[in-house]
Image (cartoon, rainbow, N blue to C red):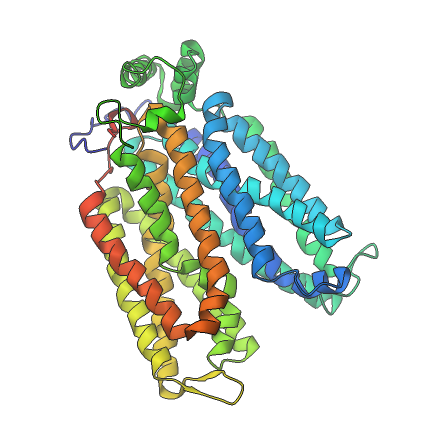
Length: 475
């Protein structure tokens, strides 16, 4: 990864850009489903409690149990992709999305529902690491970052569409607990709506080729050459196959977890720690508190429910705008500057939120009274969301998909994906406890500390990968 002399590419004349963009967008449907599956639960809480007569459904544990499925899915997806292929794992994930969407809506008990949600978590985890990895392995270095950034836009779009879908279905039925179509309650249809993009994902995956780098690793040289010819043209295909084989020359065995250990020092490779660090810091800044507890957060500081939901919509719009900016500049200014300045921006805005929450009053029920500090908290929070989605949101996934050498890409993604979703689980589970124990100011103080530490991590540990061919990545 420390190679600072990337091989320039001047072969755009033979390159099938339309096809590369087409298959990359198909891969990002997995990101859309990742977002939709994460967001759909928010509108179904009342229906789940009524159907199963359980106050536990929809609480922190049930959200977090899905995240454990995500961690498992991300961990095994990387290894399975080394055995069976990137495309094969994406297809299995699509099937899991379909089964989870149908099962979550038809579930007749709490346990049955959780099982289907964990299945969905496995799919989300697999898609979260495999979609950016697949895009990185088929896209040219000079606009690889841009195409991989589309994944983050797809995730946020999935969240947004889930919120809109939930709102529309509940409004049509009168309430999420009311019957809608065919005698089934609206909350069940909220899950079934996901069947549309999930089935589309599975269908479209039939039209994408396997990753040429995986094919070379497996010894399918001719099949890899055919795919590379479709991507870059016949003249470049032979050279590309040779470059991939050269990058694998020192390791003739099948990819395995032991490859993450440096043979000479006997220690875990530095690149693996960088991957784990990127995955973990993305969560330690507390972004999923905004995603999962946004309405709870703003109601806790005195906003009405309708105003809290409106703030969430504004945050979603800012998130998409930030990602579009990153998409336009990531292959020009690079990954490291975006990460560094994103961390600085998040530290400043989180610190301002801590100041605002610390100076708020409190009513008899324990809710904060923001008073004159309300506008500062609101502006700082939305600026924080903007900085995250301009930097760590998309860039972390871009780097994980491209920074590992060919031999350890699957294993490196497995470990990093496990760290990412494990950290997500930790932050999601602990926020309600932090809220009750040390309050919003204390909780956001910890997230500000995470942002501050991430600045040091980026400056000291992360190396630029802009424009570097995957075969030149060192670790």
